[in-house]
Length: 185
Image (cartoon, rainbow, N blue to C red; front, side, top):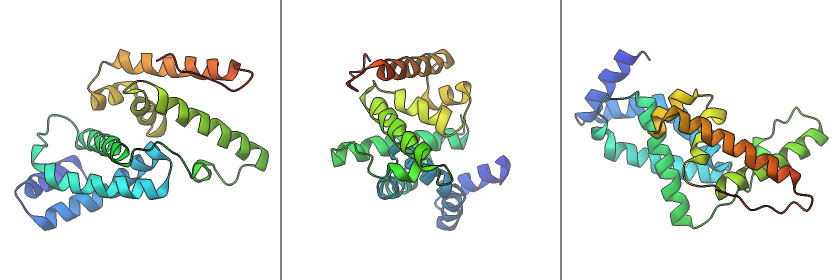
């Protein structure tokens, strides 16, 4: 769907047209779910977050002001829903790490990837506000630093600094002989 078509659909949905909102949701559902899944790494949790994001989208579509790309606004909505969902569940677990690992890899590579991903998710959960979102937008969604900065409403240099800090923390983690680690951020 082209931007003018999507903009028109958004405007009609903002006017209360349920069919237009349904089309808008159908056009964006996969993106909502994908980002929720990358946030938590668990299909069941991602489905819950996606459901919450769809409800929130219905409640807040009127707040979209066309000042940024709809996808940027939608990413922010999903991030907020994910954070709210985790707070309400009072948990930060990643049960289905196997879902993130590419099945065509050899077993040794898969096990190594699983361990690395568990460490990375643990690291991101322990770091200060904004680090996980930054990593997911740039590395999970493939956005540029500038695009991630626009979504997160921070400077591009902040995105670059956060990614640098994540890499530094990963290097520290790799240097710990006993696997113990405490984030410095």
